[in-house]
Length: 131
Image (cartoon, rainbow, N blue to C red; front, side):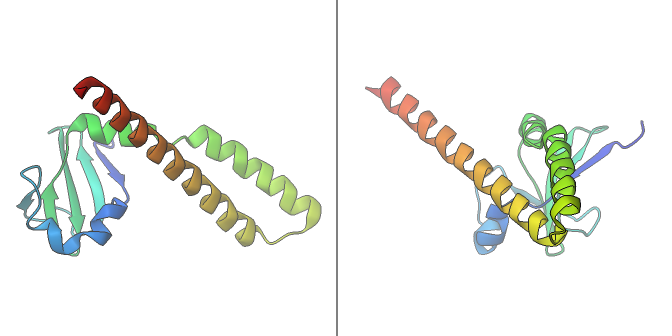
């Protein structure tokens, strides 16, 4: 099977809770690092997911969680926006690096807004069920 290893960047919460990672919930158990590179990994042959960060590794989440994380990355949308950015750069002779950083800032802001909204809706649903 070609490309059996999928890689995502380290989730942002890992940077903020590094001290708490060793004492985290039962979902995380420390394992020996496989690649010794920071990342969120999924092995399609063994159907295992893990996080590697600062020369340590932990089993993490389920395959479904990794696949849903993978679905949130929309390459078609990114390609269309990149093509639009390139046409603006050529037409107005603007710095591409500046536009690219603005694009990623906007993209991440929208993603965070969606995550917050979905979390709020989930909490409201839980509250309604409990009442």
